[in-house]
Length: 293
Image 1 (tube, one colour):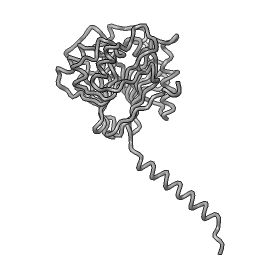
Image 2 (tube, helix red, strand yellow; image 1 turned 120 degrees about the vertical axis):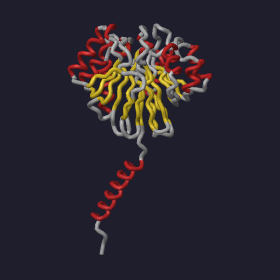
Image 3 (tube, helix red, strand yellow; image 1 turned 180 degrees about the vertical axis):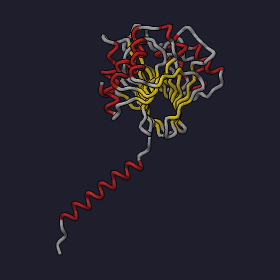
Image 4 (cartoon, helix red, strand yellow; image 1 turned 90 degrees about the horizontal axis):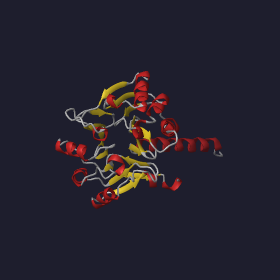
């Protein structure tokens, strides 16, 4: 009896379906952290294995309209990831190159939880708009302090290293929220604009700071990334968010030299575009947008 072609088609479809399901179960779950290319500013997007999203900062000082970076760059990127809401929105400090586009982003994608340093004495127009938008979105608002931890599921932990409750630097850079993302055996440290005073304070607290990946503080300026700090963090990968031909001279050649002397591979958004770190908790991969620029 001749073999019915319908059975062949059914068999092929079944094998394809089995392959798709096998791939879904076998593929490792990863924590993906992208330092966005926003020019002279900072925006970091973290996507966890369970599908939760954390955004740290959303600002720039390089654009003609600095307040549009959230809605025109970050929101579309999150939509490509299949996201329509932010689980944790972190504002490290309210300098314009970190906050300018945050209100626009939150209007497009509300956040369930917002972490801030509460620097209301530095009430710039961008920061005021950010706080109004947080209230309008009915987000849970929390002041971040050292020692707080957040469980993002699937083994991903957010550890807050700075600022300390007892330390109140007038300089906003050193009051920056500094985070350590931990997933199994991998750690990524986000230093925002922390400089040497904040680094020393964190080091003197004796909390764990070692991390394979470091988002370098204050756009790689000479004011941070001290030898003592880099020795303690011991990063193998360093990422600097900075604008092309920026007026501040970021990153400092001295900072680059220190990073490389400690064996770190340096990635810069002004040269590499967005930089994405993916880790399954053991191995770490780096991807950049260099080829598409």
